[in-house]
Length: 387
Image (cartoon, rainbow, N blue to C red; front, side):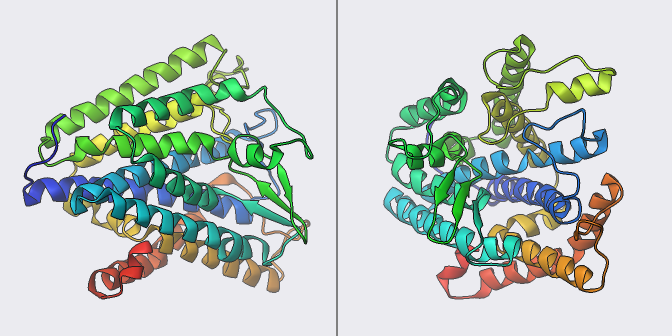
């Protein structure tokens, strides 16, 4: 594919709007999942979920959130590629990615964990999605120097091949245990005051962010929007076809096999009940296939209809911190008013109430994000670009 040589304002607007809109959409789905974490913890979900114990409504609620991390990290890589195209300087992009990645890692172990646990030194320090995104950005700052063909090969090999490493398990005290717990197996790392739990092993996410960066030439100015949509639909369709093929065989690609249920619904839920930590090859094929299809569809929607979603997507880190702390304040305020259940937690009665609470929180979060987006546009301080 030829590099960009020119780009009119309409093309630039359509491609950036679709990326921000999709980012905003998955962030709202993340809000729903985090509402679940604060008001529905009395009904824990495993990874993958235990369908015999988890109500279908809660299963479906959880499944929607599976789009969030894969699509967001894919778009992070794509945005980095657009940054490099805009500035024509891979070095500047590499430095930006490394700085932002290190900032995210710092935020994960401070403000993010404080919001989740109320402590800067909790007994268990969870290294979750912000940590994974941060490390992925640092990894991409080095990977982007490779030729595009090598980047595509790396992304495919890691995303589709890492399940071949599932049998390689290290125990605490084994040589390489810490590194392997960060890369591929969930583990606990000793800290002076407790342990750090590697909730998001990062190796597969390195492949996802590299795949996003490799998509960059599709969004160059020389590529007509119709051609880009066709490519995105083709790639998304190929990923979904590969998912259905692999999953049908009940073999490689997902550690937990699907089973025929008592009803067609339960059979379908079992088929898409996939491992997220770390994300299996089937998990990535399904979620990224859907994500690419959504990106193509959003490009066909008039920009004015996507403005509200783009507002969320224009300030992703700000949204993440704001929604997490808003949930923490609301949760603790409800506890102070004596609204806790038997387990000293706020307990929603039905899964639909999770969606209701999330919907109530959307307007104030939209107003906050709109303020931040405007501030980023007007302020002279370049540091706001990290939000």
